[in-house]
Amino acid sequence: MSLRKRAEELGIRYFLVSFSDLFGVSRAKLVPAALIDDISETGAAFAGFAAWLDLSPADPDVVAIPDPASFIQLPWKPEIGWLAADLWMTGEPLAQAPRQVLKRSLSRAVERGFELRTGVECEFFLLSADDWSVSDACDTQQKPCYDQRALSRQIDLISQICDYLTALGWEPYQNDHEDANGQFEINWKYSEALRTADQQIFFKYLVKSVAEQHGLRATFMPKPFSHLTGNGCHTHVSLWDRESGSNLFLDSDDPLGLSTLAYRFLGGVLHSAEALCAIVTPTVNSYRRIGAPVTASGATWSPDTISYAGNNRTHMIRIPGPGRIELRLADGSANAYLLPAAILEAGLDGIEHDRDPGPPLDVNIYQNAGLASDVRRLPGTLLDALRHFESNTVLKTGLGEEFAGSYLKLKRAEWSDYSSQVSAWEIEHTLDC
Image 1 (cartoon, rainbow, N blue to C red):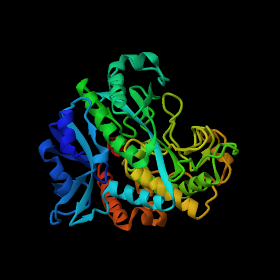
Image 2: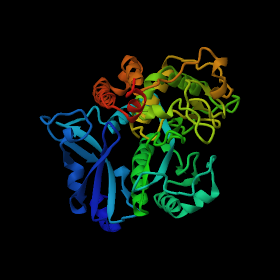
Image 3: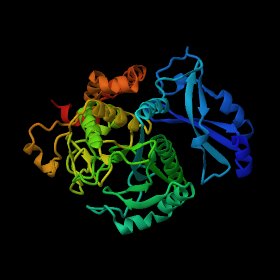
Image 4: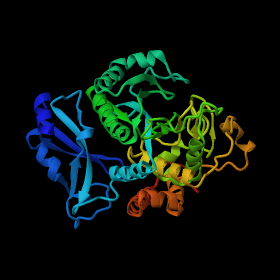
């Protein structure tokens, strides 16, 4: 069925044709439903320089071709449909476009008979729209995680989001107040990686839109408050056999329930961890979360070492159950398409080169990092991570040299802009030196 006919059946008047740029910013055009079939053929034209795509004003238009499989009818505004789009320029896929980067990586997995499935845990804060403070003035517990009363005070907003996800068929299964005051998480069922990435992009849009309806502001910023736990985006990963539909990470005879393939994949992620940070913790603020001092709750819940363990939340990688691994490194600023692409490329490298992750380190690594002198530490700044990414051939080659060049160029400029600013801390500590 054509998108136009589907729109007529559902009462849709307009479509948002949307794409994500290299910084994870969602861009869109509003297209009348009567013209959506034409746009599906020719694409919606954008001036690429106006987004973070490393293009110039002299470049031709970027054309966004919507993917019908990504279609979502806005639950809070049902006359509007949303479509994720792939970017093209001069008749070729735009190499540095994040959705294209992921599709290329997934194609390489398909060539090996693999299907990547992912699930994400997107944490967010609900803030006052006026001063960006925690919106609930009564949400002040030192250990607020799972606080029933704080959750109940936001139950109208949280349940509205959950109801929307249920109506969309995402199968949400739990909602909770997280470890920081004003912080929440809503979980839905894992899926094939491209679908999860499209969902993650739309989820952030949905949460922010519903928060605005309630007079609040939602943020996925990694560390909006120095004394509170930051926003993570824990990512659950498994590889499946495309023919048999079996989970290739599962081995019931292993103590942690992982196959040899899974351990090799895990070894690849550990091998490229420093470079991976440039993609999955991609902002200056990300490094306020990694290795942060203990928060008011007593733990940051974010990693600072390149290590793994069983069901132990102090490590970069946790094995929460048989047949999957959980990367606890990524944060709320990670691009939804680049996140799984980078993990996949690192994991495939581990499989191809039989990278051994070594035994799990089942200690509280926050308190016992000294017990393992050979455990590497995560980069301390975005600049450190970018340097690791530049020297890492696994990710640069896997994600594409053209993408890597554009990404490094824009991210170095971001770091340079940040470094040129004089902060209040510098004034306080240096003015009288």
